[in-house]
Image 1: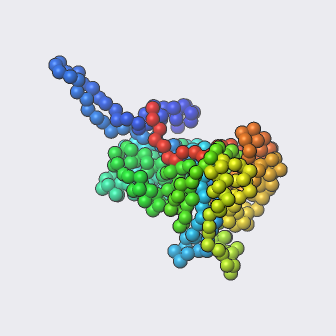
Image 2: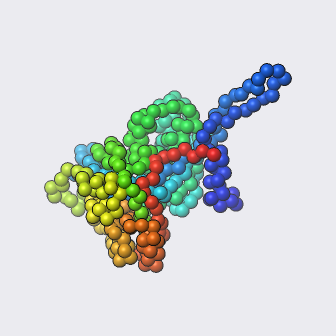
Image 3: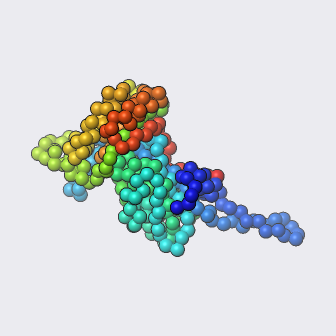
Amino acid sequence: MAAAGPAARRAVVRRVAFGRHRTARAPSPVGPVETQEFPPVSVTVRVPAKVNVQLSVGAARPDGFHDLANVFLAVGLYDEVTVAPADTLRVTCEGPDAAHVPLDRTNLAARAAEALAARYGRSPAVHLHIAKDIPVAGGMAGGSADGAGALLACDALWGTGASRAELLDICAELGSDVPFSLVGGAALGTGRGERLTALDVGGTFRWVFAMAGRGLSTPAVFREFDRLGAGADIPEPVASAELIAALAKGDPDALAATVSNDLQPAALSLYPELADTLAAGLAAGALTALVSGSGPTTAFLVRDAASAETVARSLRASGTCRTVRTAAAPAPGATVLTA
């Protein structure tokens, strides 16, 4: 690893990130100067984390998935994925919890590169470097974000010109949360979460996130959901009209009254200590608290930036979590960074 810190490395990345083709100019003894277009040296894409402000889960389908009414909200915690030509496909990673990120072809970033390459009949020989800032195995779609970021970066690097619909189709093949990581903002996900309808957001929502001491497996949480609900009549998932209206108004109090997560009891069953973190954030003044997605990250909606700092400070002192972050929402989806 180079001696420069992450901020310095990212500054360098931005200077070489794809935004325009580089132009090589050769002097000519007569006539106008000729130009020649070259492909970019590398492409860097920034992609956000998410919080589920509503996660309504239906019964298990025959294919093992569950129908969802999943209201996504992108938040301002980001991974950056840089792709550059290489002799073979390889993945590297830096940042918090990087040691827990798979560097083989099970990584969604690698799978995204392979999927796009297969569609366009080319080799997926690229170096994918992930600068992680989204919690790993934290219920904030960090792996899905990396998949969406790699897909957009490879599209730009290779100049495939894939349409938005085609990119979203590949995202849906990669995983249920990957399409939203591409588009960001706010959206209702139906089916298994991959069919998106954009939602209006009328203001900025402030969040505090508490990262737990260990991760939770999303499949394990869904299995626990099925176990806890065995024999029960599980209704079809439906989006909350009141929650969607609260997002459109930009009203944190109204949103706090309507957030919900059907996976929270399962996450708490597998990781009971999360209840202490939720209680600590509420005691510190959060408007509401919930497990983010399948967990174990816990999310606290607050009224403003000052409240965010107060809640974050109390959570850090509570001893109930590993780290604490603050972020605003909504955030843009996967974005190519330019010089």
